[in-house]
Length: 221
Image (cartoon, rainbow, N blue to C red; front, side):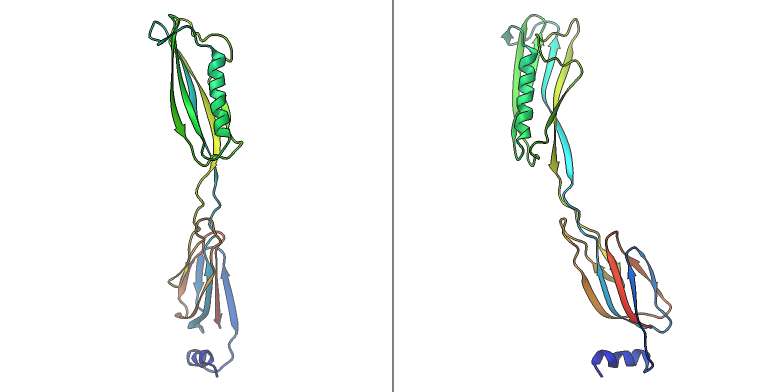
C-alpha cells in the first residue's frame, strides 16, 4: 500500500471510493460531500495578462492668433500657407514613429501689419509609425494672408497619433486558502497544483475564478 493509499484508508476506511472532479471556470461554491474529508489535488490558474492596448493621443502643433492693434516683432503679413506647411511638417515628423521630436508654432498676426512667430520643441515616445493625422479648427485657411476682421480671433492645428500602453497583469484565482496567480505583464497565467487538502464534509468552500481562469478539484467520494 502506497503512503497516499494508506492515508486514504485512514480517512475513508477500506470501502471502494469513486474518483470525482469538479472544475470551476467562474466563481462559485464547492460543497464537500458527506463522505469526503480530503481533496486529493487542487489545480488552478488565474487569468492571462492582457496585451498592450493601442491608445491614442493628440497635441496642438500650431496656433494662429489675429489681434487688433500693434505688437508684432516683424513687419509684414504672415500667410496661411506658411502656417499650414509648418503644421504639416510636424505631422510628418510625428508620423515617422518611434521617439520623434516636433516643433510647436505660435503665430501672432496683428492688424497693423506686424507679426510674431514663436516656437518651442517637444519630444514624444512610442509613437506608432504611420498613425499620425492632422485636423484644423474651423476657420483655419490654407492660403492667403492671415486676417480675422474686426475682432481678436485664434485657430489651431492638432496632430493625433497612436501608441501602445503597458500590458496588464491577469487576476488571481483563489480556493481553499491557496492563490493561483494571473499572468504577469501580458503573459500566460501559470498552472499550479496543491495536494492532500483536508476539508470538512458538508462545508461549502468559496472558489474565486476570474474570466479565463480555472480551478479543478479532484477528490474521492
